Length: 135
Image (cartoon, rainbow, N blue to C red; front, side, top):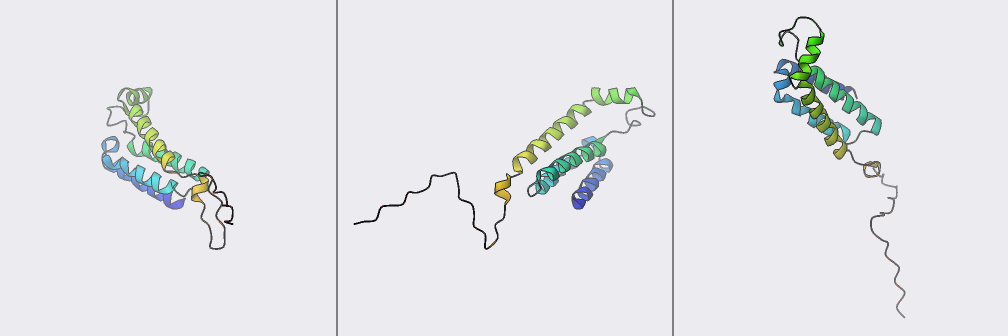
């Protein structure tokens, strides 16, 4: 999990210094989320999704000075909503969640069998019946 955190922080900093909301670097979050959730447990997947959402918001949040405002005020929050920032971020986070949900395999597909372990029988096709002996 430490490497995921470092990845998310570095990408958030890259977003912050390369154009914030308008930077195309936000797509790298897809690569990080997909790569890290493939072998992660369910709880780790939740943490990765939440971490990606928080770092995406922190990396793209426009500063009040760019909007012509000084300090943190109600006008700042209203300007985020009216400028379309909130809708844009909610859309990006929804797509990140959808992609990571599709790429995360089920628990049965992730299980790795050792050399002496027997694989469980496949249930997706019917078993063959034993043929009667030829007489």
